[in-house]
Each structure stands twice: as structure tokens, then as C-alpha cells.
Image (cartoon, rainbow, N blue to C red; front, side):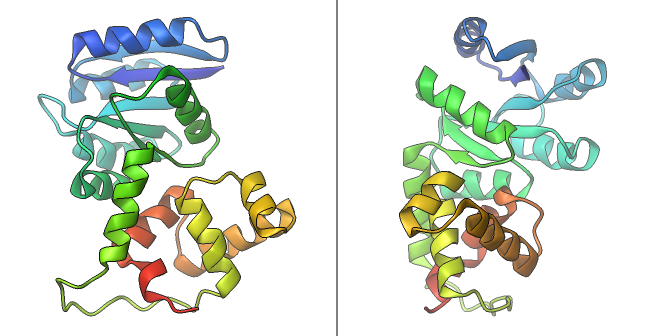
Length: 219
């Protein structure tokens, strides 16, 4: 049973999510709130697995909430909710610990898939959000002359795995796409985590976006 907390200042939206979750057998809506400060109060009182977090809250921004949660509740999974499909919002909340970013016009099936994957330690983005991420990566660094951080060399196969991770393929789908075993996929994922010095898949996605790794690394 995945225990859920919703933090969003739009009452009708919260009620809609609540009605969806009420009909699901593998999730439990433990609590809901409408501002950032209440998130921390409720986390002290309840055991929560996944937080559905609005990017824009009336007292504290969702980004700042996420930043604090990463320090105080490192095992908590955060799925960001937003009406805005903007690279700046996406990049900032990922940088501060979110495991996914979905738009508020998402349907029931996609919401449940996102919750499940985030709970499992994977990442999830709405299709439109994925397109925004990819466009940002393609743009590269053409408007900046800043010196790029140096990273260990990423092999061609690791780049292929990383590309599919960014595109939200599951481990099984990556294995099928590249005609390799699940064990080999996990090995490449582990190597990427070690090389890029990040702890999880969300970290891989964030670092790739911030440093345009798939754009700047040559095969």
C-alpha cells in the first residue's frame, strides 16, 4: 500500500485527486493540505511514501519545500504537480530532489503510473514535460560561454541507456530496445550513477539536463 500526501492550494483539484485515489486498491490517501508549512506538520504525524506536491504554494514555493524535504526526509518520494510546462520549474524542482513532474491535466491512468514508478525509485514526466526536457538538452549551451564541468567518459552503450532513461523507458523496455539482459541494463545504470556521482535515477536525469550530457558527449 503506497501512502500518499497531497499538498496543493486548489481545493477542487485536491478533491479530484482524492476521488481518484479513493477507488484504487494499492494506494492510500493519508492526508491532504493546502500550503507548504502544513506538509512538514503532517509528515511528523504520518508515515508517507509519496508526496504529490504543487510547484506553486501560497506560503512556500514547492521548490523550497522540496529542497528542505531532501534534507529532512531523504527517503520520501516527491512527485511535482504543475500547470506550467517550463524548463526552469522542471529543472529547479528536479535539482532539489523531486522524482517526477506531471502536468495537472494528466488523466487517472497516467497519475497512477507516475505514483507507482516514483514509489519504486524511478522517475516519471508527463509526455509534454519530456518534450520540454529534450528541447532544453538539444539547445545545449549556445547562449552561454561558461566552462562546463568535466565528467568521466560515458561509453556509447551507456549513452544509449541514459537516453532511454531520460525518455522514461522501464528497465525491461530498455533491455528489449537494446537487445540486452535486465542485469546488463542495471549494470549500465549502476555505472552511470557511479561515474556521475549521483544517488538515483532522478539525479541522472537532473545532471543530464543541467549539463547537456547527451548533447555534448560524442559517440
